[in-house]
Length: 250
Image 1 (cartoon, rainbow, N blue to C red):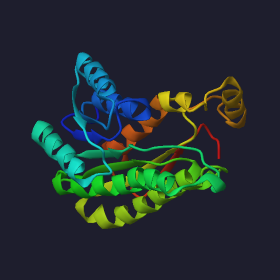
Image 2 (image 1 turned 135 degrees about the horizontal axis):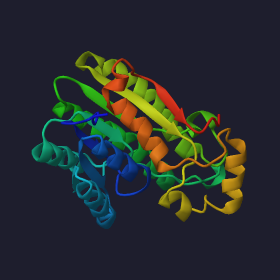
Image 3 (image 1 turned 120 degrees about the vertical axis):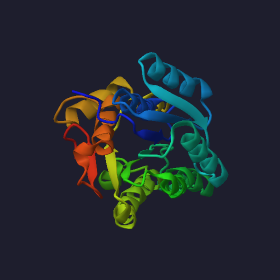
């Protein structure tokens, strides 16, 4: 089967590691030229670019904190200069921290909302100015917590609820331009980030697997495959939808 994204240009925010890195590599494997965005990990972004190019794909790393308008403008401008008009935007950049109600601070709130929500809006706002006139696809990475709403995640879950609603709004605003907007909502996924914050202990992994009908943890490639579906013409008449990628966990 021929690659589904040959000739397409994609930006993946927060793609130097974890889910974002897997998304970038899967899009590139399907023929897309991919902008690998990072905020601090140049080494990680360069590694992703190297893996893509060594496999015969096209990729370019761009540093930008998507919560800052000037840096978003730079990100999109460099993408267009390097590869041309945009066909796919994946809003993946985000931050995740546990805080029970009594420990929530202004700093904690703004850290999450500035990146997870404002960053999505700023990046989408700038990117759509440079989308292919034929249309394209925006994929927002949300989370199962937007509906599951576990304790200790009031702020993070709130940002992902916002992402789900914004997706529906943007679907209606951008539909006339043939730009589809959808979300992928993963369950707890094994990444460098979930390992570093202590969420990948044997006990937690066993508990999650036991609660998941398919009997295992989510992996970055599980999310990436769903993103490819939304990026490609397979989903040409699908917009405003939330695809839960959780192995059946609800």
